[in-house]
Length: 119
Image 1 (cartoon, rainbow, N blue to C red):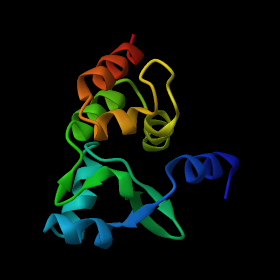
Image 2: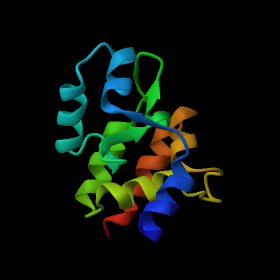
Image 3: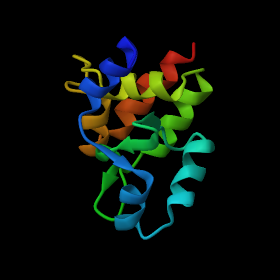
Image 4: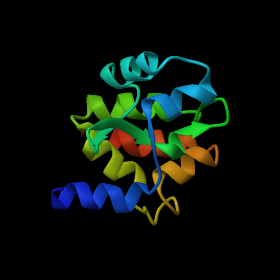
């Protein structure tokens, strides 16, 4: 693992394989992989397997506002790893992390900050 991989591991915490993520959502692992390829989800390879943060899943759906936020970050030039690092790094102006804000239904605040990164 590289130092940046360790940073992401420490920031994100719990991960799901595509199969683990797909099951509660009622979709196939390939559907989750397609969302990653389209930039609507972010994933990284861990232990030879593509995974997403467990925090992305909220019951039987993805966290509200997550996909739009990831598209904005992608448009700003962020790689999956950079987007994950941004989502899981504490931001005193929120407070908490952007991911915690999304899970707390404060997506407008998060997207406003993501849009500002593009300029």
